[in-house]
Length: 179
Image (cartoon, rainbow, N blue to C red):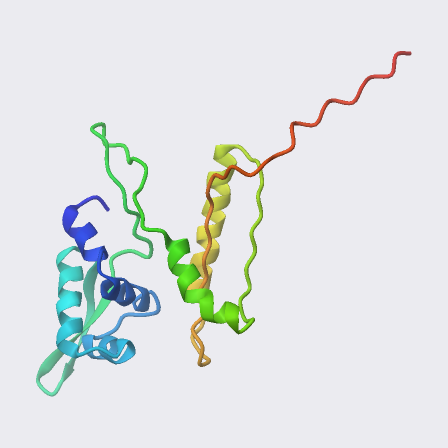
């Protein structure tokens, strides 16, 4: 996404929550309002803003007592925020820090000793990092498509970032035996 209207639409936390809910399935404004605990008018305003920014669309309608009830769905499973260069190439994306969001959300789970997390540091070539991140995105999509049930919503967070962590030098080639 590069359009200013799309970026403005994503800048609101309630709109992000709506998009997150719609990863599960298409929903009506009433269903979204109930899930978010917000008034229908408020949710309808934000759904309209997301639709105007082409992040949501009506995916089906249902006739209920002479009124067409609209079900909204996302226009994409993943929205990448970035810019396009003069040559038409996508440039590095601008994103808010999802890890900071996850850290704040996971604090109660950490306090209750219910948090599962891991950090690993590996020195790898940039192309290998891109390939690995593609696999992580596939895993995140698998997580988002798990059958719904239970009474707890589980978050899944992943990050891949360069660090200043120390690394061992390349291993020296073994010395050859002089025969």
